[in-house]
Image 1 (tube, rainbow, N blue to C red):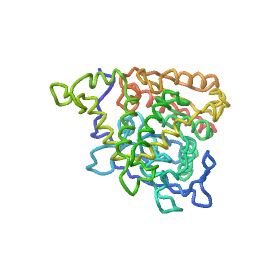
Image 2 (cartoon, helix red, strand yellow):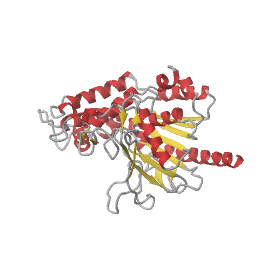
Image 3 (tube, one colour):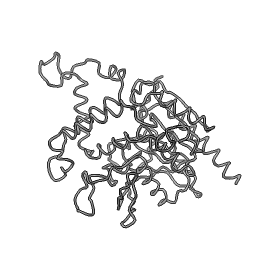
Image 4 (spheres, rainbow, N blue to C red):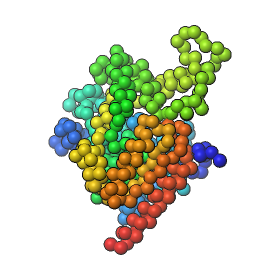
Length: 395
């Protein structure tokens, strides 16, 4: 039987969900960013599913990746054609079981899908921030999430879970707020970007900034840098796949033709696919947000920021239980980076489980249906939940 399974929408969805918002940091009590800049007011879009139990001990925080949002599972309406981005994992009886856990997912600071970012209005000018928006970090994103959980009255997180840039947020939670985090599941992530990852992000940013419509970030009243953003997405999308996945999916198959055209049309299926992905992306994402979020990911360095250059020292700040997962074909965040993370965790005597899942689909494998990943997440959360309950009863 295939490792990857089809998602059946019927009967297993969390059902209808609602996007909510939380505002804080009203002047003069602005949020102080890692750069020293002040930002306020701040709005964070978020969604929840499941029920918070009486002692508020079953909260699970899910952190999304670069272009994700707060819509992690369920549907906005009865005729909504597409569920949340991790509906395969979050729901009744699924890996993250909404019959047991209260799920919180928020749109990160600096994004464009409900939370404060460069495309939202600057209260000082009543115009979109553009490049007047301060540079934010992974730490700033987590600090905003912490304000949201304080608002919800959640003092303990049973587990914080996320992949890619979401995984960086998971790690940041563990070292910045160790008293709150019972367990963590960082997926397909790293403690700091390699030169290769930074290089791909820089090329993508340059594609946006080279678009004449970018106008130094001030494009909201006119034509937007759609071509630059589309190319940036095409570059990023290549890094999310793998050689094997592209061979299986496309090979050298031609797109709707029997022979090559001897021009610069999209002859190959893979060319057409990338153009489609780029065109689709510009319909839902903001170019400036892409710049800010990729820069935040490049700046993230857990060792330097929390451990004086040592991952072991950085992880000495946390007491969480960990499930670390990597994927064999992920060349953006290769398994060696997860192994280095696991070694540092174990040197601190922490409870750590690690698995490298064999998968052909590259970095995006954590978003695809996987029996192995679902079983591991489900089993880990059940163990942590049971152990946490026993510890609470013993107090």
